[in-house]
Length: 476
Image (cartoon, rainbow, N blue to C red; front, side, top):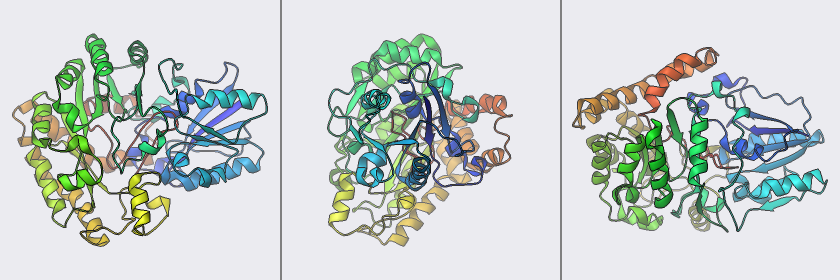
C-alpha cells in the first residue's frame, strides 16, 4: 500500500525556499507517529510542504493530510485534488476536530482528536475495504506503548531543529483561549509516555541538543521527575515549555536544570487578574511573575515569555507595560500574540454569541491579525500596539538592557547573543533558505544552531508548534 502523509504549508508558494525560516524549524512528528502504525511492506513518505516542493502528479492509495487553521484552505485544495484522482483522503488535526463538518466536505475520512488510538483501527478498516467516514478519539487514550515514531521518514537535513521530541500529550490546564482543549475533549486531557520509552526515544536522537515540543513538560510531576533523573547522565541540553505555577512549585525546575534544561517557554500571557479570571487561566492567579523570572535566571535558564494582547481588560497602555516588564526581568525572547478566538474554544463560542467576530477567513487567525472587536481599544490600536511591542522589545537598546539585568557575565552574553543572533539576523537565515543553500550548509548550521538553540526560545516567534499525532498547530 502506498501512503502519502502531507503537512501543507500556510500559503501556496512556488518554492518552499521562499518561506520564512520559522517554518523550517521542526519536522512533522505527528505524521511520523501515525506512520509508525503502518505495516513493514507499506510504502510511505512524509512531505512537509514548508521545506520541500510538493508534487501532486502521483496517485497513492491513501493520502493523510494534517490540518491546522492557517493551512486549512491549502489542505482542502490538496484533499480535493487527490480525491478527484480516486485516492482515499483522510484529514485530521486541530482544525478538523474543531470544525468537523467543514473538513468532512473535503475528505473520505476524518479523525477527531489525537490519532494514536483511532488510526490503527482505520488502517484495519481500510485494508478490509470498509473505512468509516469519521473516527473519534474518546476514552482510553494512551501513548504508553505506541511504536517508535518513523524518524527514517523525516528529512533531518531540511530542518534547523531536527532533534525535536514529544513525550506527553495535551495540558492539565483548560484556558478558554487554548486551541488544544477541544482536541483533547471527551477523553484524557493530559497523559504521558512511559519513562523508559521516553528515554529510549531520546537515545535514538544524535547529537547533544533536544527540543521538547510538549505543551507542558512539567505537567505530570512524577513523570517529569523520573524523566529528568533518567536524563542526568546523558549529557543533553534541552528546551521545553511549562506554566508559571509549575516553575514556582517544589524543586522540579531545579531537577530539570540538572538534567540539562537551558531554555523554557513560559505562558505569562497577561498581568491582569481580571483577564486571568475571565480566560480561566487560574494557574497564573496570585503568582509572582518576577519570582518566576528570577528563579529561572538564577538557574541559568533562558526564558521565552508568551504574552497575549487584546483581552477585555487590556487598555492602550498594555503594550508598553508588558515590554518594560519583560526587559526589566531579563526575558530573553518574547512571543507576543493578538488574542485569537480559535474555533472549538470557549473564547470563540463567547465571541460568536456576543457578535464580536469580524471574519471567518481562517488565514487571518494567526495571532497577528485582529479578527474580533476588542473591548477596551479599537482594532487598529491593538494591531499597531502589537507591532510596536515587537519593535520595542527587539531593538538594540532593549536587548542590551535585558542582557544587563542578569547577574552573571555568562548569562548576559547568552542573552545578548541569542536575541541578536535570532532576531537581528533572521533576514540572513531567511536568505539562506531562499538561496536553496540550507541543504548544503546543514553541517555549518547545525554547529551554529546547536549552540544557539540550546539557549534559545521555548517556542518560535509567533508560532505555536505542537507535535502530537495530528496535532501540529502553526499560528504564524
